Length: 160
Image (cartoon, rainbow, N blue to C red; front, side, top):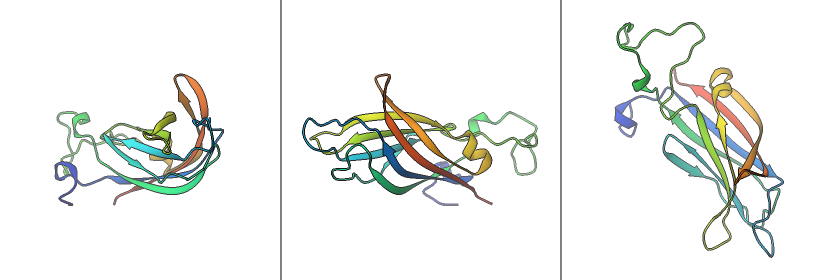
């Protein structure tokens, strides 16, 4: 066990998020090209990738972020535990993840005095947690309006 893990818990796996590229981002600048970057949030924490100077409306990052996933002990039923102290699961079922089965992704323009939100989305992790990998375009919105798309490659490596 790692002393840096929450509550001394051991992670059940690692979620790798590769933010590859974006397309059709609206330009948040009146003059010139914007400097876009993305941030990914999960379980109360946020990580970001570097801004692409003058990346404009079709930036390419190809940057990797990693999140350790932990079992959500609060979702465990009382009783019926196995020898490890964990409740047995039906075949094909997976344990609840602390922080839920979604990540938030937001794109910003870093070139202003304060970052300006370009668009954001919520990504459901069910497929990647089940199959081990997933990659696709995710639609970004801001104030219920289409604001482009971001392409993510998601991989889940289960520990043990």
